[in-house]
Amino acid sequence: MTRYIQATLLAAGLLLATAMPAAAFRLIPIEMEFAPSGRGATQIFRIENDTPNPIAVEIHITPRSQGADGEDLPAERSEDWIIFPEQLVLEPNQNQSVRVQWTGDANPSHELAFRLVAEQLDVDIGRPPSQGGQVRLLVQYKASLYVVPPDARPAINVVEAGPHQLSDGVVMLVRVRNDGTAHRILKDPTLTMEAGGRSVSIPAERLGGLAGENILPGVTRDFLLPWPEGLPVGPLKGRLSLP
Image (cartoon, rainbow, N blue to C red; front, side, top):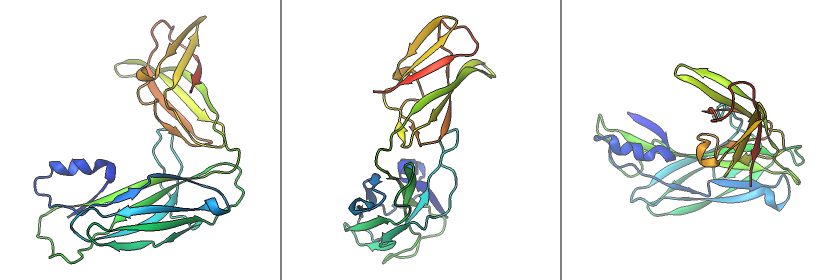
């Protein structure tokens, strides 16, 4: 049996007592910006095999868009990139450079987001066949790619806020939209909410799943947060401040 897991969840494999040691690799870097044209439209990634076993890796790129919960939406592979090589075999402790070139729109109106997916292939290279019943954990990395036109800028706005009823009480629904032309990570935000002539500022450490989130241009995200103390339950006006 084979299970695919993302690299960030690889540690979960330690819970599988029957798992055999899995060959692993590293993708460097995990985020890269590209210019729409010119020299900056080509960038170099590096794949490292720091294990004692040879592995095979395949690379492809998909467009990236987000739902209201921030999850990536399904997408087909993009034809606007050249990847060389797309497949490679790495010997133990070997590393190899991978050239990635943007060949799409040379003058986009806003930043374009993609995922570069590098995944280990389920093939045995120079090893005896796996025994029945064993689990092989294959690593998959997802890097963030951004094709960034000149003067692209984010613009984060709170477009709606108010009560949201859950089974155990009322929480605050905050709807945030990126009206700009580039993504923005909500690093160290402060959320200021107003109602009934009162104002409350909520620091990053009390913003739960909002702080640190990435919002792509044109995307609207919904966040559920504890109701601010001191504010009456009802419609709110909000403002998000970022350093």
